[in-house]
Length: 183
Image 1 (cartoon, rainbow, N blue to C red):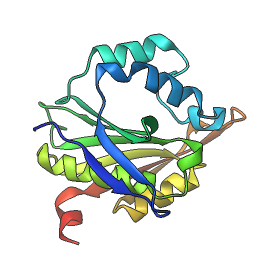
Image 2: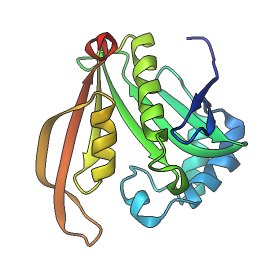
Image 3: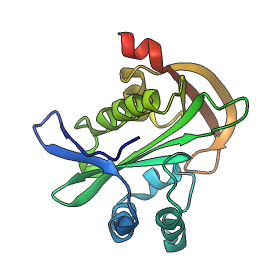
């Protein structure tokens, strides 16, 4: 896949640059993740408050394993989406999708823009299905993924913890890449 950069337009007319993450994005990523509130950080798989996590990400970029897509407005990172892939084994046709949008860009269409771009990239990578795991309390995220063509395939009761430490449900959503492209 050739490197690229695209410009998208949000619902309010804001122009957003979409591009792959590079090593030089370290400080911008630290700033982006520091601006997230604690509620949004709960849904992340890594402790992004730990600078060494970001250092590891930018030092070990392998676009064939994890494709990190950034959204920028005026040089500031406002969204981070990743497409996780396997090149061998029984899940080599599947990709896992994760999306994080800064609070000031939520509700403006950026999440949908990032997800749609990952679906397009998935086809280029030869993936057939995309999977998103979403905490049941992340109702906005569930709606955004549904709007982008994902359907709920499973709900695992009491599998994850909510903000108060109580057990909560995990929703698994799947997007059939080829079927979505035909709609």
